[in-house]
Image (tube, rainbow, N blue to C red):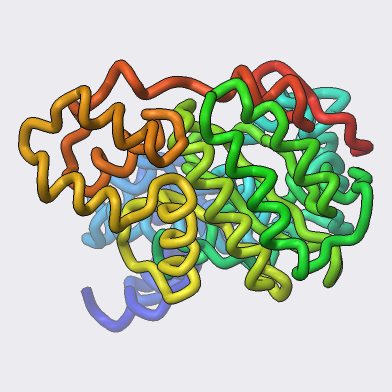
Length: 377
């Protein structure tokens, strides 16, 4: 390509340059191209686009590839479109949210109340109410102000949405009194006897409320993989929320005691502590290690479990296992859970892994499994 065909921003500019380089009038060129002079005038003036058919004709006459004309036409069309429709931050923010949030699930669970689920404006307003933000751009840029304990990355938008729902519900709950750190031993003493039977877990919501701790169970959004959270409405108002996504007695008590340890240590006052896969042992900081230890000791003391494993492995006789649970005064599920976790033998004691969710939900503030928490949206 020679100089006459370079540095042109539109196909019309290139055609005009080629006409001048060859010393042709538009009438002469139109006759050579086999198109009307009117059509050539429009194309050369960028008032009519260069089609693939016209590009081939131009290639034959001027010796410039059809691809060159079409590339200029595409660039010109895109530039005009950008000028007519400048970047829209709200549109970009909406796209980000719609790709990261389970909007349909949030609507189905009445987290978002929309007049028309197919109307983007209605969804924008519902998201604004849910997150307490005036526009979609502010929602998209929400700071991930929660500490997620299974890895160093901050919570996902799905996890953050769950956290916002928890806070909204908790802010409307009443408790019998302000929480006091001096009540730790008294609270644990009331909870400890409940480890003997799965149905005793029904008393947990009432007891925590009596000690000034707001407790609720909010079903996880799909893919969130949250076990629980510790947050504070103010310096004297702790909140514990659980997902009960693993419906097992040992998991329920481990997660609850884990979150209680966060409360006792004042964790989560600056930013909520979102716990995910808390027993995994991966990338845990000192706070999480301490909370896990407290949970383990509460359910079944580590020294007793380790001693039992050392003496009875690999057979773990049923009679001895049940005897240990009886000595510790806890349901066999709690002992089984600790042994399974330490040995990674998740095939052990399966018949003792009892469910507990059905005992807890009727007496707790619940959002999920078909229930909608009484919260103003």
